[in-house]
Figure 1 (cartoon, rainbow over the protein chains, first blue to last red):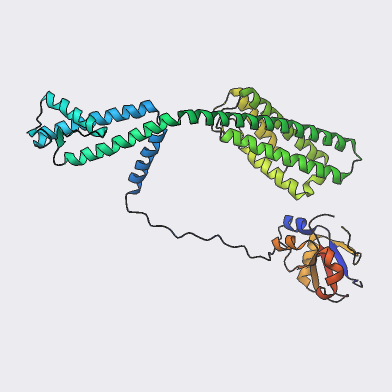
Figure 2: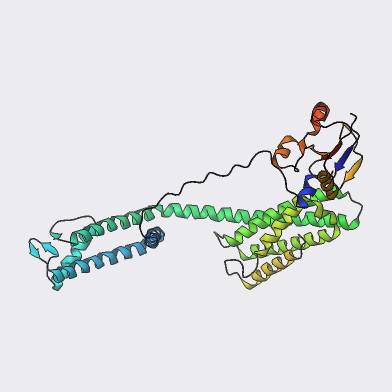
Length: 312
Length: 76
């Protein structure tokens, strides 16, 4: 076509980025829209958080603990009604008669407390003055707690089924990680042999190494997840075999680096290696949130140490 | 990847590219697909995907004697 003064920048975009060169974009990157801050009602922040934490904890408690809480509440309110009665002389009224401080009246106060909490409200004993406020609060609290109790009883069977599903999914994932790791190990070993023997096409090797290491990184990610977010506790033997395979894989990658310096030219490979380094850095006996058996901790430390020998 | 239009006479390193751009007079041509170009290209580069070279080269590129530097994604 007549162009005589043409040169070729062989490194291309990859080489330019590695050299720290900036890139231009055609499409401007849209900044995410910022939601305007919604002003919250001016209740004291700490009080609010304590209230919400209490309500959340209600949902977590067992049926037994909820019933116990309910009983304590009723007794507490009952005593309150009784005390208020003889302190102020203007407490509960039973058929027109004011309640005093004797033990029989304590029994009536507790009776009133039960009747209110269960939302029965016979009306043979009625509250006066400030006790009316407490009585209403007690009614609401009683309803709330009972609602939670009923829903917990109903949800029990559902909870059992869900737990079983989680357990199955977890074991499935564990098994898959194990299998994939061993496949990757076999592939890395094969490539290492090719590399050591010499004479193989470097581009083909590179592609194979890239894909094996990408899979390895994915499984390392899954293992990191398993250790940091354990919905279930992994079987110790399975975990140990996985950690051992991980260590083997990291050793294999290091050997490959020594055998094939071309690996440093691939951007996707370098990115995988960086992920491997940062994930492995968080796998050590004392880093993970759960306290595992000593031999597992030793394996984790070994993984961390082997990863540190890899060049990134 | 082979360029159908012209056989490049030289292969440049990153530093050579930088110095030629700084000296001025060179045109950087990105021969990747348009999508790749949009996501990120070397500063000052123009987009001329390989398939379009025969059709659009004359209108986009400067004169035949001007200096042109082509690049794509990575090592070819």
